[in-house]
Image (tube, rainbow over all chains, first blue to last red; front, side):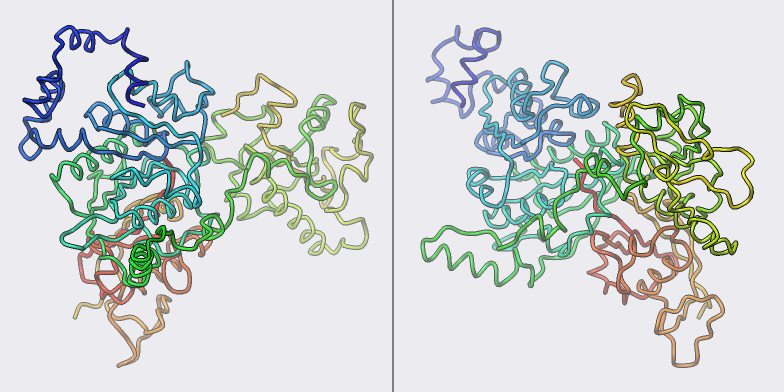
Length: 481
Length: 118
């Protein structure tokens, strides 16, 4: 890997040409522990007390696995590459998307669509052509994790999902290496060093010691759903790089947890953590004895027998796909059908249940914003004599909103004593009134009449696939975000 | 003994969204509370039937009086749901007795939801 990177950059790096013209590298390495040019290159950090020449030598012999080359992984890799870490492993199975560029600073317009691990490797070699980089585009899973990560003396968790966080913690414990874990979302960041050596045979807690039970997947959001500020991933990623250097140079070896919020005062908080848990299934007594036994018998050490994805409540739902599944007949409307209704001049009560910030980015012209929480608090206030179409970004929250409105319709009927006199409002869908066939003109007379008598209610549906489907199927100029 | 204690509560990691999007809260809690953590304002604690207000009571109090979303997003079985870390004056609550930590005037309790994004 090293020679490959050297060859690839021989022609472009003046530093190397200069070095080669000087020749006689053999003599340098006999006399000094570092190549000659490294003294100048790394001098600014080598003159630090506690770092010194030995710190640089340690870094140049170190191997660090960075799992995730995204918002956290990019600044981590950038600093570790610049600092002269001997070997860097970049693990990421994802490819570069335009929405990554706001924070994933090693990737660029030029590398869109490229595997992130390779894009990051290219960027790092521009910083430091002598780096030894292993770029892995295979996803890290329980079966391959130990063999992929065994060669590394430190693991950095820069991932974005719960099962991988548990897996990496178990791998770190099994291999006996520290784990520097970062996370960021919205304006918040968290940093923690797990499985840290604290003295002879004593190690700090692992991720499982602190969080033995994973959170319910419905309480876990992603950067795509919740948003994240680029600088916040930069803050945490930079801190991870600092922790890694502190550990490898022996400057500091305490288990720490730090939390950050861009709006808090003060923005950082350092936390005193509990010790390792005796009953921990990864680093507790039983697990440690099991591994010692495996080693004594000359067997491969193994991870705890855990199905990581199931343990964390199953696979993360693909919300874009979930938003497109058709509901019960007549409960969901396709974007094309809504377009046709509007084109025919029908009055449609379009309710957008996203939060006001997202609504203000872009919305359908005739829609009004009723955040889901507000809608659920009093759904009956939002019923209409016209057909109601509930929408959101991908078509998931809108289903919840539409269900609540239909329930309110039924309850209203019962309260008004109208149940049984007419077909139930909730069943009076557009199908019942002659839903337009695909491509034909809409025939929805009688549905959206203004001034309908009290109790006259239009059907309630929601938009399949949300505004994203509207953009794909109806109006390609409608922004997606 | 004072009849109420003042504490500071802070939410982090997105938990503030469940509490009116407010990160920092100043609370006055009764110094002595029912053993069953009943947080109703008018509840009378009989002699010998109470305990000092502790973190378990605080969790019940937050759920009953300040939480604006579904209870299970914050509380589960008398404690915080998995994925929430509690700090007592910047120390992991496990080192302080978890729910049984008796609150003192001026304490700062922080509830952190773990983040997973990267």
